[in-house]
Amino acid sequence: SRTRKGAAHASDARSDVLQYLRSLMLFISSVFERYCSLGSTSHRGMDDDILSLVKSIVPPLTSKKHKGQDGRIGIIGGCQDYTGAPYFAAISALKVGADLSHVFCTKDAATVIKSYSPELIVHPVLDSPNAVEEIEKWLPRLHGLVVGPGLGREDLLLKTVIEKCKARDIPIVIDADGLWLVTQQPSVIQGYQKGILTPNFMEFTRLYEALHHEPMDGSDHQRSVMQLSVAMGNLTLVLKGEQDLITDGSKVISCSIEGSGRRCGGQGDLLSGSMGVLAHWAHDAGEKKTIHLKTLLVAAFGACSLTRQCNSQAFQQHGRSTTTSDMIQEIGSAFKKLFES
Image (cartoon, rainbow, N blue to C red; front, side, top):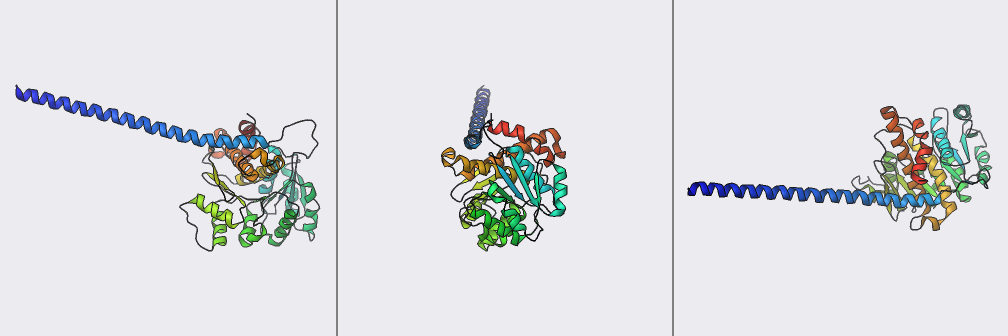
């Protein structure tokens, strides 16, 4: 009888322990779920806060404006081998809301780029002997310049044009082949507060090592991106990646709006073209609209968000076959969802 009672007590004790462990596991699980939910809500909240600043710089559509008032953007790039990149950047600028989009390219690229779209103004001047003069005469009419898509290694020409733009205080987005020049001669854009660099990871690594003369620490991208921005005179820098890291050397903001796993060529051109427009709008709106963030940080975040949203929407329709042309078709609806809803 005592043996049976002891066994019953042991069984009851085991049952109590098991019940306690189940309750403990449920409690831990609920705390973990709450923690994750709060974390994601906080991150979404930060994205939403910056998106509201982007919304504040978007100029209203009104019949009282004249053509060109909302943006005349120039794209410097395009040669015989690369005609798609300048087209993607230029047409993206138009679809984001610029009124006019100019492409300055070589003669053998001009006819091809014109055939892609009649809406672009194409100047076949890059390989002419007086290329700088041909570009310079248009600079007073431009609100922003995107340098590099499909350009090739035109170092001397590019350096001179950038200097001319700086003298006129024009926002400059430098991407692709333009970043090669910056890697070789950082002083060409160093310290220019209306300059934006948009490197991918490999371009960023080359640029970092050229400035610091030592290998980059790949374990802390936020620290590295801030260090490079400071070394470049607090230039606005966008490191493209799983999360786009944006900094002016004093703070880093990340854009983690969900895109997709599809990484087709040309997405960076959509980013640079849209950034050229948003940089103009941000400077036109002024620091009062962007409150605690510098205008170019807001513009860069807006362009990164838009590119990611276009990628997501295009991928939902086309999956693995998604191309940048599919993404460009989503600019209108993505812009409305992010900045006009």
